[in-house]
Image (tube, rainbow, N blue to C red):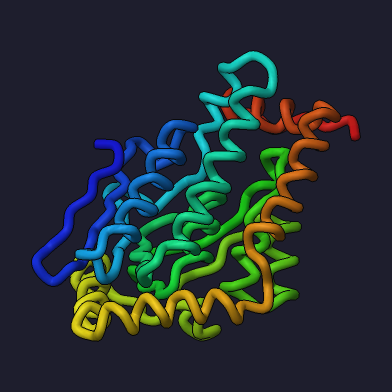
Length: 253
């Protein structure tokens, strides 16, 4: 349960999220995930990191119930900071990060996957940003690394999902395999990377980040500013309350 990690003899690190029932992470979980990935990247024995999950889905984003059970904005601010740290940890990790995605990948899951270096997915995987339905914004920065611009915009506005097979067509997903084969598919890619010079691989990761046309951390932080505004307006609270209470939100504005 929670988040576990291991490193095999080839230098392949495996980080597994297992937080039933839906693999949503609370504030502590986001910071813990960030810490684990950063430390693995700093470990000279690690040559590549696989990030995957157990259960019905890869990641369902933040724990909205925790947020709504906390007075004021402390939990919201902490969740935003935790997500920022976790997404940045994947992007800044000194070695390549492979995301192995099963089931649903929502909200914060998009942030993790969009910042990964390689993505493999099971044939049941779907990807979506339901933020507008929760009165929030964020991770469009990362979704834009997975789909073309206009598809990204339609997905943000409608909160509709996209399949792993469609992402394979766009070229952002490397392979789509049966769920039973997902872990091995990720390890197959990882073994190929781990067999190469670790010095070259770390240099390659740094150089690719250096030529990235978008500063993903600044871009995501900009998005978060609008989430703060929506919370101050009160519309976000109604959206999250409706989610927790399993009812339709009632918006007056």
